[in-house]
Length: 147
Image (cartoon, rainbow, N blue to C red; front, top):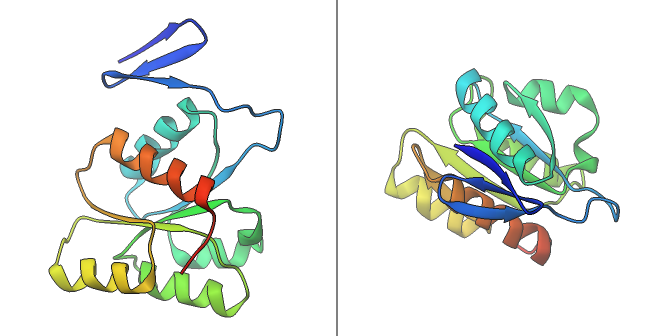
């Protein structure tokens, strides 16, 4: 449910004021092997004024050579090529250290604990609320990368 109101968008019961995009629009990179999840997250985050790059696996992101331009990553944990955890570690080895939000359809305590130990900005089991994802990304982008 979207409705334009006073320069803000109303999504799923809350208002979203648009970011000041003139001063460096933030780009969020989303990696998930579920096309419908990619589309939903893309629409949600674009509604908040972010630029979004979507990838259906780790390899397409790595092959893009553009990961350095991300302000934040959203990685599915269970990808067809390598896990979201492995992807984040590989990017860190290449000197690309950005905040990450992990998402998963297969929620396990071990995955939650690993995400926390790795310093993830957030961890969400699918289905999750759009509000939670947006809040976690906003906080991560504002705070920057810290592990």
